[in-house]
Picture 1 (cartoon, one colour):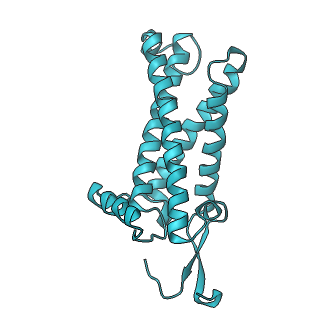
Picture 2: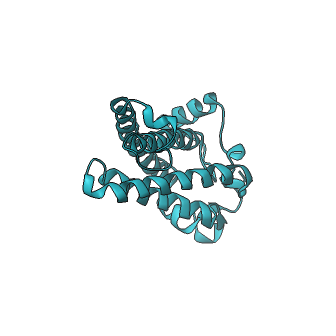
Picture 3: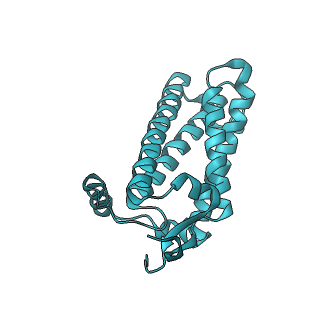
Length: 195
């Protein structure tokens, strides 16, 4: 296919790209500073930043640009299965924005990160710190909250590994660089293709 048959399409707006890479950075920072008392201030502020980012993403998922809106990419589980079967056979449909498996991953990551963040704030409250320190959350059993926090932090890492694997497989199958697209916000598509 010659380059003159390709067009550049804007897919991801600047706010989505800032959100994505900020979330990567703050989650990495929070994960690496977990459990170290001398790093607790950095850990907690990274966690607060993550929760602020999630609130933004939920709002932008309703009022944002076309490809950012949940209504434009979240599909039924059946469509996710069809897409995954297509990946296995090498015949998965190509999507301009998120594919069905990517959409499912976004929902799973948002849920897991939100539980991680909220349980972290609740855990911090049991020590008398943070915005929930004077709430009933401060009376919750510390050990149980810590288990939930650590489980979902590690589960999020597991989801991220699957997400990165999916990005690699999808990039190879559709012959595009999805990481570059999340940096530039643009993808190249054949002029005749409509999605």
